[in-house]
Length: 370
Ligand SMILES: Nc1ncnc2c1ncn2[C@@H]1O[C@H](COP(=O)(O)OP(=O)(O)OP(=O)(O)O)[C@@H](O)[C@H]1O
Ligand code: SF4
Ligand SMILES: [Mg+2]
Figure 1 (cartoon, rainbow, N blue to C red):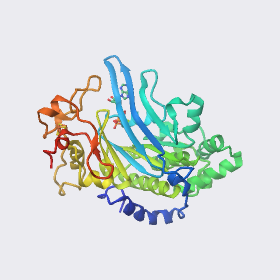
Figure 2: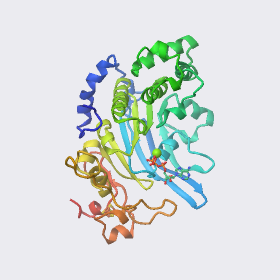
Figure 3: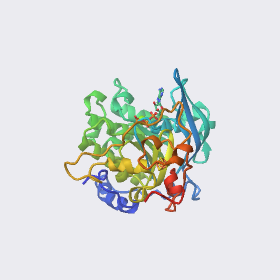
Figure 4: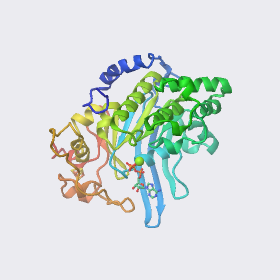
C-alpha cells in the first residue's frame, strides 16, 4: 500500500511504516545532530515571519503571499496545501529568493534559515544556499534538466560546486545517488542524456540532484503532478524515505490534501495568500477548525465518499488577490458564513490542540461550528 493515499496516522506510525522502504534502500543512517541543529539546541531550522510577496501586473498589485508566518523543525515534513493560486509556489520561491523579477518582489518579513535571515544574504551567498543546504525538486524535470548534458555530469556538477569534491569523487557520488534513488544499472545510466529517461526516472534524477549536496531542507513543489499515479506513489515514498534516512526536513507543496496526509508531520493550509489553518496532521484531519479545510478534505477520494459517489467540490472562486476583501477571505464560498464573517478578517489563533491554529470566526467566538 502506498503511503500517500491513506488516512494519516501520527508521525510515529508513519515512520514505522517507512522502515521497510528504508531497508529496501539500504538501511538508515543516524544523524542525531541534524535533529536539533548543530549546537544541539532545540532551535528551529526555518522561521518564516510576516512574509509578504507581491507581483506587479497591469491590473494591479497581486498580494500573492500576504503576511505568512510558520516554522519548521529539523527533520520535519511540512505540507503546504491549498487550491491553485493560493500562494504555495510563491511562498517556496520567496524562501529560495527566486521570485520572478522584476514583476515580483518580497516586500516584507523575515526568513530565518539556521538562524540567518535569507533576505539579508548577498546574491552569491544565496546561490550557495540553493542547491547546497537547501535542495529543490520542481514539478517538471524536463525544464530543470539540461538536455545536452549527461545525467551523471548534472548530478556531479552540483556536488563538485557545493561540496568541493574532485571530478572523480563527484562522479562516484552521482552514481551512488542514482543507485539510491532506484535507477537500475546506475553506472551505465549515468552516461545517458535526459531524453533517454522516462518521466518517472527524470524525477528520480531531480531528487538525486537535490540530494547531491546533502541538503538539510528539501523544497518539493508538486513533485509528482506530471507523473502517472503508480509512479507518483513511488516517487513520494522515495522522498519520505530519503528524508527519514538523512533526517532532511521537507516542505512538500501539493494541492492534494490526501498526499500531504500520508507524507507530512504537520500541514499548513493556504487560502488566498494566507495561512488559514495549521497543525499536526492528525489534528487537521480529525479536528479541522476552518470550513475551507473541511471542504478540501471532502474532496479527497475515499475519505468521505463511497465508491461511485461523486466527489464534493468547493463552489465558487477565491477572491481577487489585487483587492482582497477586508473580511474572512473564504466568506463568499462558506456555507457557515454569518454577518461577522463579512465584517472583518479573523486572526490565525490557537485552537487548543498541539500547535493547532485556525483563522475562523466560527470557532473564535466560542464556536458555532462543531
Ligand atoms: N508571474 C505571475 N504574474 C502575475 N501573477 C502571478 C504570477 N505568478 C503567480 N501569480 C499570482 O500569484 C498568486 C499565487 O500564485 P502561486 O503560483 O504561488 O499559486 P499556487 O498556490 O502555487 O498555485 P498552483 O497550485 O496552481 O501551482 C496567484 O494568484 C497567481 O495568479
Ligand atoms: S470565518 Fe466565517 S466565513 Fe470564514 S471560514 Fe469561518 S465560518 Fe466560514
Ligand atoms: Mg504552484
